[in-house]
Length: 231
Image (tube, rainbow, N blue to C red; front, side):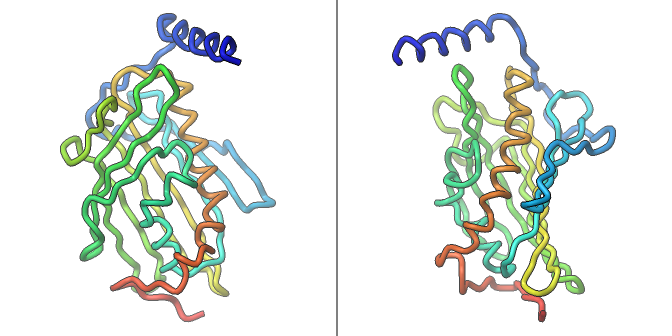
């Protein structure tokens, strides 16, 4: 087993020096180009994942969608439960609440785990949410900034990261969930490693979302300013 682990590490190192890499040098979010492409379609789970190309980078943007049985408050509580997020969101190694939710705004620090020999990536993210008065849909927007708390030793700060959650009530206790995101990893990373996160992060997160919403700690909660629809 030790010999096999050593071989795996050597293979990773060989890949590094062979140059199969993409350098993410953009400092601002690039514009999208082309159409969404379906990469995951699981009708039994009501789960789909689409990706599309972004200008000036080989890292793709993702958009995942599913339907869960939940209240808006329980969904919000699940996403804001930073202690548990690494347990159900693939590749998320750490989430720290820097500034608690106040006036529909909070700040978080997160670390994205990537395979050896790469360095983990981190980001400081401003999170804001709003609710449509007519449809009761909730939109959570997370946008990173280079400055901010954190910068864990051994991590590379991501120059760009944005993730959006949209919760749209469908009636009868069901909610359509759309999870969209894009990130520039910074530094030098292999294309396949960057885009592995693009599919595994939304797919795993949406698969595990219902189980997290159903946890007692996420039930019977209320959010100031949040209005639940009258089914």
